[in-house]
Length: 99
Ligand SMILES: [Zn+2]
Ligand SMILES: [Zn+2]
Image (cartoon, rainbow, N blue to C red; front, side):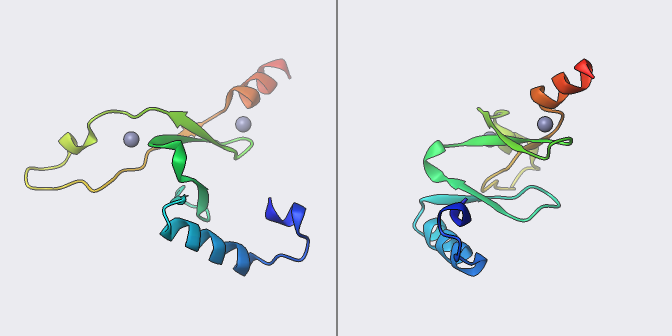
């Protein structure tokens, strides 16, 4: 996105800035298995992601599956969790059924 505004910007600058934003608590990194890290604004709050197999877009999913800390064995402490759902987004599912 930054490159569309400033053509000469390089990736190192972008990642350095993202690191600063992350350290400052303004951005959070999002890890989708098998993909480079993505970043999003921290103010969105706790939520999860859905990755479409077809268009490879990642969508924000509101809400949470619930108290996942109850899944771990006794004595374990959960620090945080990330949930990524995989499948086909509405747009791609619609395009497929029309074709
Ligand atoms: Zn899709
Ligand atoms: Zn959650």
